[in-house]
Image (cartoon, rainbow, N blue to C red):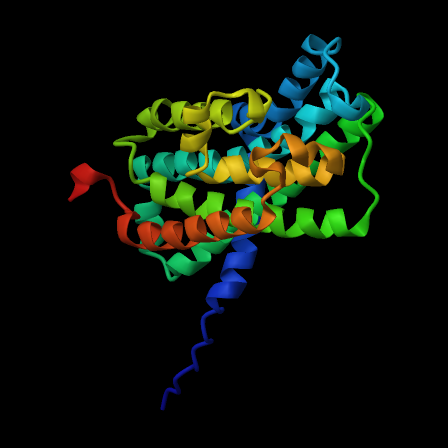
Amino acid sequence: MSTLTPTRPLPSPLRVGMSRIGLEVKQFFREKEQLLFTFFFPIIFLGIFSAVFSDNGFAEGVDAATYFTPGMIASGIFLSSFQSLAMTIAMERDEDLLKRLRGTPMSPQSYFIGKIGLVLVTSVAQFGLLLVIAGLLLGVDIPSEPVKWLHFLWIFVLGAASGSVLGIAFSAVPKSGKAASAVVTPVVLLLQFISGVYFVYSSLPQWMRTVAEVFPLKWLAQGMRSVFLPDGFKATEPGGSWQLGTGAIVLSLWLVVGLVVAQRAFRWTRRDAG
């Protein structure tokens, strides 16, 4: 008489997702082109801007490296979250990787935990490297006040979370993996130019600032300026303040919108697959 061997319960979605993070990180660092563009792009640009604008003085004795560091940190978070996920998910869909994953016991929640975990790991690593280079090589003063780092923490978390869900949602826009770069990159570049990443935000035309206020990157960059620039700089911001409360509301709204749109628009298969 044969006996049935009891089946082992499947791991929880959280446990599978956590193990998926390690795989996602390994794959990310193996892609040299993606690593260079996403990981080192803000660091390279910070060095370029520091050299080009080295003779330009800012208020309170702030140099170009110090002024542009917050924008590059914000840009790095946006590249690691929105751009990276929008492009890689579109390419994985085009290569039928998502279709194969859907046929496994791994739940969608585990897949997204892996992607969001990748964003957090790469964003923290990128920020740490940028801070080391800015502090040691470019002479940027690193904040020492605990309250500034508390502000940094919630701005970082909200920025990375909203950028991640928006990247997942936007991954449905490119029709193919090959078109992903052509579709996603111009959107990111446009937001960088109007959000105070590459220019002094107060010097931008009013209509451009009005458009930028709708999108999360502007509030992410402004929040980072509140952390890394002297408090006197808030007088140059719209309304004469850092507007941290408004920034938290806008980023939270985009997080909610991104979650809703991602749930409705995300596709496991290509459009031509039916």
